[in-house]
Image 1: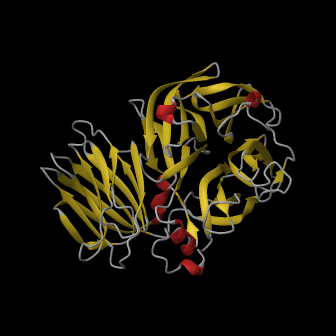
Image 2: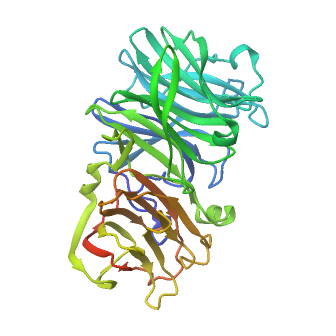
Image 3: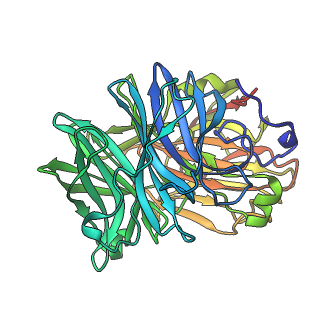
Length: 463
């Protein structure tokens, strides 16, 4: 296990159990793969500071999805190569026993030339040998696209398939579908799907496409919306037909998620948590960006997408506080800025939820609640801190009749990650400035009841 640098020991905003690099900037998860029992997480990384630019692939490894060890940088730009100005996002696959990365290399002062590149490892994913030429050098038919990046690759009976995120001018965001016998020579097939620009933007970044149950799922991060959308539907004859559409982490901080299938057959997902404070504050802090808790995706009986944290995170649980038939108020026995909270409510006519990071005088506090009248889950950050956006983060959520409300919250200093009834998520950043903003409370209005509340004090993944 690798410890965090001492320079951050007194940084009360830096998360302790959401994955982060040793320092500097991180964004998209890349190339997540389980190899010989161990999980590898690659990610977009700038070794030169806590700001975007000069994209490399950082690398970490885990035995249990919870505790991580930092490894040397996996990919760096190669002068005069197809990735001379950056190694953008991509994925990892097992090519008959050869670990292989497929990623976007960029050149040009504005990263305008984008091509799909390949690298392999012969020493257990520690070092990587790049193919000198791009394997998919240009968009199909020389099309003038708004972008051509973030390949996602999988295998079917007749060979390898890849989608590359892009857009069709005058039409909308899309992913181009390719097929290959060997990951080197690629045949363009067709757009897998073309979206409505008014609904899903004009450029689809970081697409994922995979089977889940008896359906297929397409996940993408559309520009200029800066959201994460998913579609569940049918896949046949190289075409995808959506049947259910939705959003992951509506209006929250999740972006550019990446999935992989592990050896247990689980569809796991990570996503980049962006910051919500100024670039100057990020640079002065010396770090920017975190990864979500690993999530398990499933297909629910009603055909919708199920989302839960991996159970492995239970290993971080420390002191446990349990309450039943609890009255509203501040909990004197529970304090902390690194907690896991599971609260179950019997909803009423008014709001019910929790308060976290509350200072002793209530000057700073963040409320998380369900509003049955508006049918929304709300993160009220109007008193979170002077450095946090002053707003209400409102996410549509229809609590079905007769169902209780379960809020599963991972509070990790400046990260608030929320799972709602196993079928919706929302994540936010808060930056309390007071050292005593550690209080936890519950509230239930209009006949709502607090059925149970469980709180665990969480350990660091680094110590």
